[in-house]
Image (cartoon, rainbow, N blue to C red; front, side, top):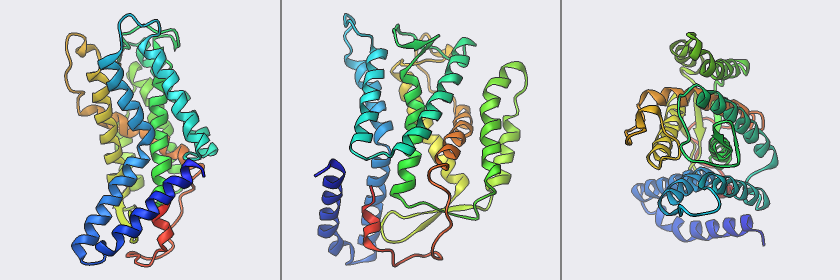
Length: 298
């Protein structure tokens, strides 16, 4: 039995045991749905959570006299996680391909940003390009992994998805702006306005349990950006990378960076949409008769 099948079996067993309790009252049903929402979110964050745990763990316990640098060890660790996800079929090969593309474009941006002094990686390593340790690209890949896994786990569908070219235009302009802003051409406020124009009034449907729920797309994007910003604070607190004003002591990453992550995250979203094509709902909300197998997707 594969690990994926074993996990599905454990989830099915838990559901069979808890479902009668959840059916006793609306409160029980809500609590169980909330539990499933949290478990699916945690499962979608598997790659990102493993990487954040590694940042914390290596910052606390990495020996100074180690013949292998902390950054190089993180590269090997990230590769092993990726191999494990593919070997256990917890991630698909087509998903891994678009995640790798985001990995590459993220690394390219890192090389430019570190060369211009936007942030630095203060430790030595062998596996690097310029001032950028290669593990940093996997941090971008973790964002794509989360989006791809959440898309499947929550059976995400879209109401009134915008024309396909519009999110791509926003994503590409946002990525270019990370370079042009160093030359006096910063259009981020225009990009925020364009984002609102493209996604205002559009929603996605996600299914934590048996019933599909609706959330505005803009709110969903902001929440993802918020969690990336929290992870970035972990990264700087562990001094895995630091901003110039953190050289002499940690301070919280400014909330303004949340906007930057929002714009960059759009590129990951549209790349994942290449393999998970945005689909319209199959039924009108509320959906109360989804087959039970829908709760066991992994």
